[in-house]
Image 1 (cartoon, rainbow, N blue to C red):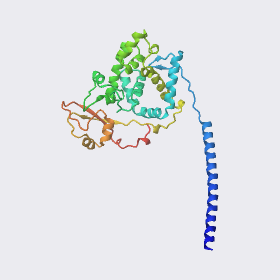
Image 2 (image 1 turned 135 degrees about the vertical axis):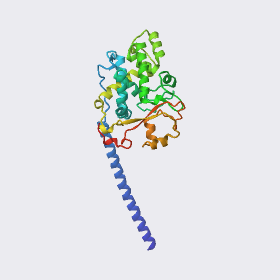
Image 3 (image 1 turned 90 degrees about the horizontal axis):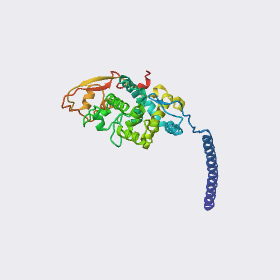
Length: 320
């Protein structure tokens, strides 16, 4: 009896296991069908569109000859890359709200075309502290030697390639020289990437006086088209599928200046005494390269810090 009872219980467990297996198999098959159906429906609704190349298009008032097939195709490439690299382009839109107003103001003061701002955008992605593998630094990506040549202080303690205002004015001087030497803002912008000597050499070698008549290395050959593409997208982001609210953008933070003309042994302590913390001090003054400022020559510097009440302000609730 005990043996038969054990057998009966075992058979019952086996039967229940079989039923559960069949049930789970049916559920899994159904889930796979639902998943397959959802995937198929998703693929039917997912579309990648070709983009219309706008015409006319210009950089600093100098038109791109889109009647040439290779010019139109080069611009088409950059429009596609920057439209469908959504995360990068959306970050550029967000950062532009913070940094571009200051750059535009300086460009006006320097008598420069407004489109020059797009050079900073493609050079650095508007990341003030970025450094290239070659050692170019800051929003305008100056090499050390070029920065010093155009009046920027560059040493172990202070590196004004990271100083947004001073580096922007230095970039203006560089580009003014390029326009004077090469004859157009487009060529000056190309020279910002390849250097004056490199562009001049190719102009002579190819008997050309226009950027669009030159065959250049891949990076410089794409340079102006990248500028034109980003200009097109950033001037009308909604047309290219970029949707956002004003508060999604990185708002500019009002600042005040504090004069410093002596040594600072510890910048973290200095920051605390002035109502901010060390990260905020470095965020607004990335040109300070150490945790101290010896300032042996007693030079006068101006530290930018958030205006009163803005250090901890939730700017997502703020509308300009």
